[in-house]
Image: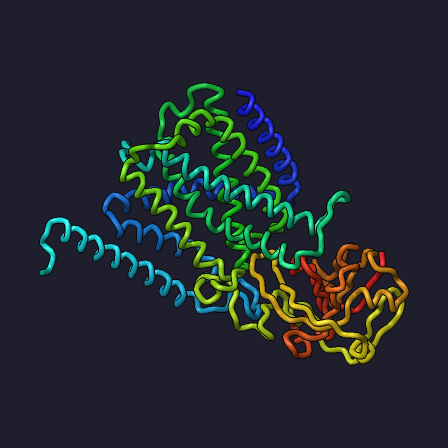
Length: 130
Length: 354
């Protein structure tokens, strides 16, 4: 119980300290909107969609879809650049192509996993090629 | 609504939570280090060696942040059924607990989303990113500690070794680790040299002058070549010809950006310790570096004594064997070991002894 109370007390102090720093940010409304947007978008948009898709996918295809989705998410700031400054050597690659390549690699691995599974199953049932 | 998947079992939640907690802890500690280097409190000391230390801490900051994105999503999916628990509020402690989880989720998303947008320099907001990211970091880690305090008995129970782990739960965990690993491999090449050609979603490329990315161009800074340029060191003036005639040192030092990318290069120039001696100032003094850049948050920087004493702290005139590119700070820039790139001031025209 002592550990739990200590963790809680330390955590509360840090939260209060963070909040004191946060209220000094001049654009407080916009800042607050960014803070609550994550849970709202996740809980009521992203998670239900992912959950429903998850119901129909199985095995390596499901894993491939999850990994592809994560790659798309981390690529968003790179492929969609409405007002990014021009800086030589930074965010100046062809990210649509790069994203396509990375997702292509993911699905090649999925295909390999799928074939590997089938071969193992065949070997197990003795129905493999002679 | 009924959630039957084993992904929602506390054994899955706790295992992902453990790794998510570690990722956030790494982000927090390395973030505090970076913050302290840029806004040093009086008690703070940051050494000039090893030369790559900041490159490692800030690389870890960004890589563990990227790794945390899939971990956070998996963690929230694992506990998603709790969102639909009824009654919504059972008691005051229950209300506080739910509220604290909203704070935790908001802070965690804020840090990861603003972080990944910031490394892409994709500023979709008008607030100042470092202040906001720093403030919310305290809220995020504080609410993680509160959350661990609340859930500790469950965490202890759930993390015990499971002699007969459920196959579908293991598949969920395996997918989570794979997604996190894929995110890391796809981006870590921004700083890890052997992943440079592997990380297709790295925000840096190899298309930079003299092989080093530029975070602020001369055009953006409003700086042009000035033939009448001279350098003022503690009141003594040096021309470019005089600097070139002084003893030159060549050193391999990285530009290690707060945005996680890094690039080592071979820099040639005059050690700051020599310049200070020539101007009659002793080694180990703090020096304020001024840039020709008129505006901009980073037009000056302060080199602490540990760095002005280090013979590898250079006023660089050349990069990778060529005269410094205008975008890299021609006629000269500061390049010091173990410092954030943003403090490696370019287009230097004055070294002021503090």
